Image: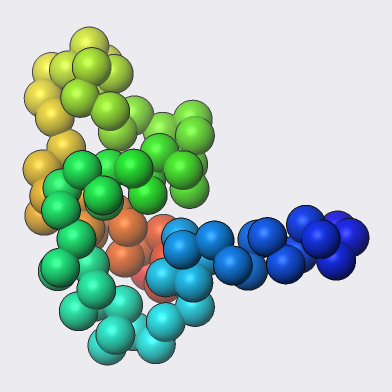
Length: 79
């Protein structure tokens, strides 16, 4: 990756969020809206089923804020 791409990557708010210590990350996620969490999930995993339309069509329900936060934490922390 060239330096311009690396600079952009590291300056993106979603990347900055991923670099937070766990305690700060959990606090930030609590402050996020459901829509912000869904947007992060779609950005981080473009092949995932997170949008309301896709989720309703494929799973029969939508991702709640709590469920989205749990998935987000798992994806960032690797647990």
